[in-house]
Image 1 (tube, rainbow, N blue to C red):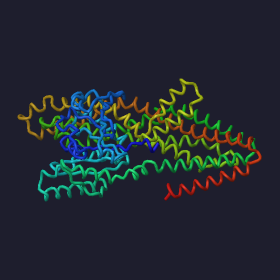
Image 2 (cartoon, rainbow, N blue to C red):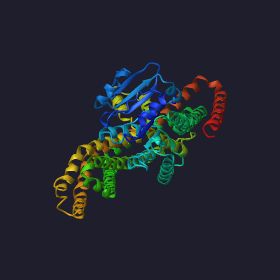
Image 3 (cartoon, rainbow, N blue to C red):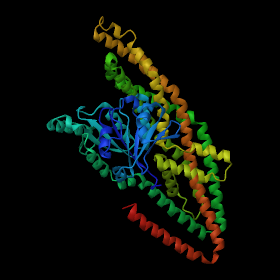
Length: 548
């Protein structure tokens, strides 16, 4: 799994921040187009390859292949693609492997395109680089919101203050100090900002070098390695116990494990039947409440923008960001909470394992199983792949139609479910934006010269409270209820399947040990001694690699 894991590093900033020019400086070429408009901007992954070509990924995941010379043509048809993979025979890309840079659309790219890029790479990104132009002078609200997003998903970032050649050094240093203070106050960010300009490819390379892929891999996999260590130790313990126990005791253990699986399957059916009453309804209400409260908190800023006829696009971006980021935070919190509660509920079905004598299927064993399940559901793509692989293996002997349905449902982690819920909702918001604009503009700006500004603002505030917030909440609720229910069902499938996988594994271990016991009846003591030695060796390696 580690060998195939990609460390995706999105480069994020405003459309005019100079991201593409900075990346071109790293490449030593002008491969990335820098004269594109926001409408033609596409997230572009930069990958090392001896053979140079482009893969354009469509919305359905299918791929179209192009020559590098066709990049401008692809950009002109950006609306047809989800993102690009740009394969270049470039030494600097080779040297930063396994890191993969992503040139992201700017904040003022079309809202739908920017939303999809953020949701795609919030899930897949391992580390983020923010680029802000020195001309901004302070942290923009858009950058603050995006940093909050990645922090909410426990991911780290670096920060570049770009275009520093446009201002005198003393002004640049003052701006640097201001932004560092903001980052420290808002996010506890203690790193120094990196100063860059259009010729600062080496500075970008230094940022990438400081990421230290080995440390990033460790942060991604250390808990998974610990989990695998505990599982391997438990496997050895189960085998030793079976070799020592009577066949009757071992058969009782297998039967009890079988009954536990049936109990979990029944629990799954009950949980699915009770989704609306136990999980979905209250969660939807809380998420809708969060959206309304955040709109209210940003009321003054939104009305300021709505009152200015020259800032209609800025108003659209702002209200989209408020709703999208609130949904990301609120849905993630709810899904995490539901996941934890489901794991605890399913864990109650494991109590019958305590009746199995001479096996260590006690409270500690069930606790490890619950922790292992929670770990998988908090992973990103790594956990997703492992969960799907486990399901595939477990369902090998089941009916094909049954198997296909189960594998399809067991593919979402908490991050995946969160983005799956948020994505269609922000699409609804985009469709609804013109209607929101019309609420504000119809008959209001025309009367601007006849009415006092204060009176106009008061009418705007009333409209915001009485129409905008209730209508946004109603639209989000309408689409949130079915998608939330669907994703919680998928989460229940995931939790249930992982418990089944781990219990079935124990059955197989006992059955295999019984077979070995019958074949090697005269060498049981030697087999046990070898297993105990293997366990000790495993513990020694773990202490040196995992627990150091």
